[in-house]
Length: 190
Image (cartoon, rainbow, N blue to C red):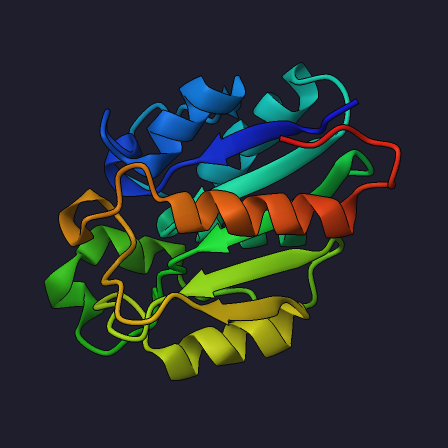
């Protein structure tokens, strides 16, 4: 059986043209819906992710974007992961500790400090070389700390609608490759 994709949005809940929302429809994914998508805290956003995992049967793959990535890593630290989570696609991780973030997007700072422990499941970070929310050097630090693979998306901005990533076919290819690596060979994939 194909794992169920759980969409973990960042600030603003990834609007209707965002790749996360398009994937939700395309792949029949579950979605984490925060009570206040503009006010992240590690505890409340992680608790909602745990509720979504508990309510979604079968094997799972998490797909986080921006502060959604921070939600996943905080959840892993607070809850220790979950035996049904087969892996996580971590797209455009936001650096809540980045100098100047309190002026750029103060809500993001509520997700600091960023956990820097290994994740209890395989993960693939897709980072942009010109992301205003995290440098490629910082994404590399995240990959090393989380024991995740790192793929450069080139100069792709924040890998969101504003940077031209609606459908995001390259992301679907990377998701397919990750699923192939994270699931047994007899499992049907997207």
